[in-house]
Each structure stands twice: as structure tokens, then as C-alpha cells.
Image 1 (cartoon, helix red, strand yellow):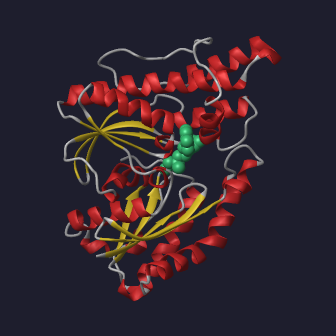
Image 2 (cartoon, protein in one colour; image 1 turned 90 degrees about the vertical axis):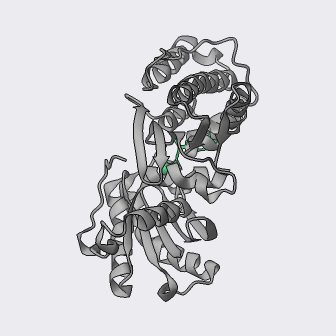
Length: 336
Ligand code: KG4
Ligand code: ZN
């Protein structure tokens, strides 16, 4: 089964062709980072204009690289939320137009479901059930994943997402955008043990997160220490605090669930410091941990095609074969 995935929820214009939910025939990502970096974050209006300009070419390139004719597609999967509403609508309406003209199924996909299932694009993936920690620019969520399309939220951030706090701390340190990769690089030259940022909400039995206090402590530290600060040390201690919080919550959730498997996905899961340390802890605890490869952690359309495949194969009957495309709409704060 050949699915064309389309992703435009934020600042990546992406399209991919995936066979049987597993084999990536092509995955094209046109990043807008250079456009937004001078503003220190994503400017929704600019994101929309660039999606409109680039999406047709990105889709064509995805089909060409996969050597797939549009007529050979079995369906289209498109991100319908959560994300920037204008940006989402460009992907949704483009997909609607193509699906309608070809009379092919149009499968709505939740962006977070894409991150949750991105691990199934890898050869090494867990059996059900597993705990998934989704760490991205907009979300920090823990799920119990019982099957494809069967997810239970067991915890989430009460304020900032972890990726957002990476971006904000990078901005405070005047390091640039997006903050995650820059903080990771900067932290390599730093030592964490001469500063002490808080690790909020580390209480057993609670699976929610809070990152705004950590961010505020960094701000206060910078205000109190002025020009004396060593940016690398601040970045290193910030990253160490994030690791402690994520590790405590995720492994506690695995223990509590009775299963042995943890999947970590979303843009922040591309961070090698976090990956290496979470792997070490999983080994100590005799748990299995899985990360998608780096380019499947950050936003991409292969994960949307993959999630679309599983949604189609599980839900097509109850969804009228996903042929009611004209009614499909985007939703900025769509829940899993
Ligand atoms: O999943 P994603 O690409 O988009 C959303 O769905 O939000 O995640 C983007 C987030 C950004 O906040 C970015 O700073 C963060 O992921 N990120 C990282 C790294 N690479 C991207 N954070 C920490 N370390 C990284 N290497
Ligand atoms: Zn994402």
C-alpha cells in the first residue's frame, strides 16, 4: 500500500511516500529555519507563505524520488493538527484537492500520532504495550500505547514544552534559533556541577511535567550573574536538569505500567546527550528503550504517512473508507 504523507504543521514543508507503513521510498523536508531564525522563532504568516510556495514542489519531488505516479497512490495522509492553523490548512487543502481529483482516500493524521508511530519506520521497534515520551517544540507528553490507534495520555506538561524551553533558554543566552541543537553543541564545552537549577515536580505517582520554573531559574541566574556567566556551563546544567526530569518521569511511567518498553520521539529526542544518558539508565534498569533515527525525530512527512497507513488499515470501515474528504478540517489544538 502506497501512502503520500503531507506535513505542514509548523515550519517544515514535508512530503513522503511510504510503502506499507514501513518502507520510506522518499522523504522530502524543506526547512524554513533560515527564514525564521532572524526573528528568534516561527512567524506564522511567513510559515504559511512559504508552505504555499514550496508544497507543490516538495510533493512532486517526493513522488519523483519514490518513482511513484500519483495514480498509483492508495491514499494520502495529512497532518490536521495540532499546529499553526494557517500552516495546517495549506497542507489539508492541498491534500483535499489531490485526493478529490484522484478519488483516493484522504486520511487525517494527528501530528503527535505521527511522532508516536515514527518508531515503526525503524527495523528495531517495540512490541505493544509501550510507554512513549513525546518531546517536541509544542509538547511534552507521556502515553501508554496499547496498539496502533489506541493511546492513553498518562502525563503532560502543565506549562512550557521541553523543546520550547530549549528554544527560550538559547534565546536568553543569545545563541540563536532553533535552540535545541545549539544548546546541545554549546553544552559540550561546559560543566554542569557549579550551577544548580531546579528539577520541578519530581514526585512519585505524578506523571506531569513543568518546565517554566526551570526556564525562570535560568533567567534569574543570568540576571544575577551578569557578564560573568559561562554560557557553556549554563547550557550544560540546563540540559542536565532536563535529563533528570525526563528520566525520572519516563522510567517511573514504565515501571508503573508493568511493561518494559520505552519509546522516545519528537524533535528533542534528536539530542545525543539525552539519548546516550537515557540509554544508559534503561540498561541499568533492564528496560528496552527505542529512539527513531535523528531525521525521524524532527518533523517529517514519513511519520505522517506511517501513522496514516495504520489509521487506514484499522479504521477505514468505520470512516467510510476515508472518502468524505470535503468535510475534513484542520484543528490547531487537536488532542490525541
Ligand atoms: O518535533 P519537532 O521537530 O517539531 C514540533 O513538533 O514541535 O520539534 C522541534 C523542537 C524544537 O524546540 C527544537 O529546538 C527541538 O525540537 N530540538 C532539539 C534538538 N533538535 C531539535 N532539542 C534538543 N536537542 C536537539 N538536538
Ligand atoms: Zn513535531
